[in-house]
Amino acid sequence: MKKLTWFSASIILFFLITITSCKKSTKSAKSQKTTENTVNKKWWKEAVVYQIYPRSFQDTDGDGIGDLKGITSRLDYVKSLGVDIIWLNPIYASPNADNGYDISNYDAIMKEFGTMKDFDTMLSEMHKRGLKLVMDLVVNHSSDQHEWFKQSRSSRTNPYRNYYHWWPAEKGTPPFRPCAFDEDGSAWKYDKLTNSYYLHYFSYKQPDLNWENPKVRQEIYAMMNRWLKKGVDGFRMDVIPFISKDTTFPVITKKILKEKFNGSWGQYFASGPHLHEYLQEMNKEVLSKYDVMSLAEGAGTTLKTAMDFVDPARHELDMSYHFDGVSLGYLPNQFKQMDPNGYKLTEFKKVYSDWDKVFEKKGWGTIYLGNHDQPRMVTRWGNDSEEFRAISSKMLSTFLLTMRGTPYYYFGDELGMSNIKFNDIKDYRDIETISMYKRTEDKGGDLHYFLEGQKISARDNGRTPFQWDASENAGFTTGIPWIKINKNENEINVVSEENNPDSPLNYFKKLVQLRKNNKDVLVYGSYKLLDKNNPNVYAYTRTSGNQKMLILLNFKAIEATANTGLDLSNATVLLSNYSNAKVSQKLQPYEALVLALK
Ligand code: TEU
Image (cartoon, rainbow, N blue to C red):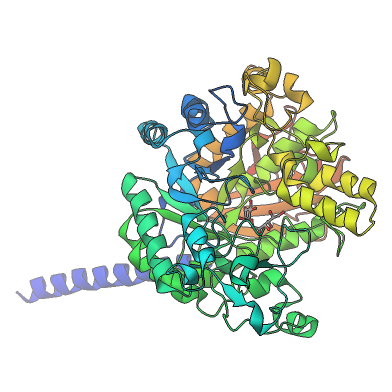
């Protein structure tokens, strides 16, 4: 008996020691891994999002405008990329002052894009292929053609009056607020009918909804619930940080703007008093009821404020995207005019490293270099010359697919589509470029200089039709396209790239698979910037447990060498945009190297 007791005691002791030491080692493993954001794995963290600009993807009825049937007809192509989620720019009824960002009916489909039946078919065909659909949600403002606004404007006593922000003219001129898209630059538009001004942060055709009115919020939540019940998988929320307003509309002097908001109107707009209260309410009444994803267009958010939107403990949104990266390289106080010296890679690295740090332990980040508000990524961040276009676009895709945070990849970038660079203002369709042109003209500014700048920065560069093949109109339409098609369609198109094993398209597919096959390290693993002052090379590691990858990206058209201080003697090449790539810190122009480290 004594023996047995001693025996059992030693067994128990053995187990205790083993358990404690196991606990200790998991603890120390955990503490080594503090920068690995592994808490709470989610499908939307592991996904690659593919953004489609519906107006320019595929036309099926010959009106020169893409449509929903067109998207449905091309889903096998989207699936072949390996991506998981499709984000569609707004497809709701709209007079198209700002290409669908001015919605006249949230429950109807834009007539150029098709019908609700087309939508239902498209959604079910996406789901059949395992693709999810994220809709654009534009609720900071509606169209001035929305029934709510028509009612609101009709009289001061109309029940919809408080759906928008009105300032009675007898109180004098309202305190200045800037708007993005109108020639006079003011966010207050005088409306004679009721002798009042209404607020619009974008164009006067996009009046801001009054979120301070609980009825407005309930209408919006009900509408969101209707779409989610239909089966959509989430929302990208347009300028959502701007929804709450201080309705006393205090005077904002230059001094206040500078001291409180870093001189940025965007930061002021994103600082409404009840913003987070409303997002929490929206989460409770809508988002929390479904397994869906939500993404804030984080206009005006900063390194300091971003976490408030996506901290899981706050129950607001899942992800947000910042503007610090895409704002680099512009000259100050001009209409999106690029600095002739380009952008500094060291600043670029700092922005993306600082933002990675924000979501190091909780929340979740995103990564993008192009979207419908940006020019083509290869022109803006790479090199669109004949010699370097393909190679530099592959290098940029390598960056997007090897960073932490969900990649938002813009349609056509997988082909290496580049800016169209219009010479003539008449070719532009975008309200932003057209109004900035008029403002420049009114001020007697240099229009040639303005147009040269737009060749690099204008949003329409990213909105030209997708290039399917080398036929007339690139296989996009049989009619006259709503905006011109890039002349490089003969070379840059799906058919020719599918047939070329070295094409940007085939390289993109490999990158997606690399990310999918290495989720621990490439999705969740920690990120560390190396050789931070190197002006040419972006070098970083991604690490998960014993698995480590080194990513070397030469952002320049010259040979460049990374000094990572790492021993590469046992490293192997996992992927590169050069077929002759070898393990080396010396890189060819725009070379991208993904190495496994032992
Ligand atoms: O963009 C909001 C936004 O912040 C824009 O001012 C953006 O910075 C600008 O387009 C850059 O040139 C969203 C949409 O993404 C955009 O397409 C809309 O025009 C805008 O809201 C109004 O809805």
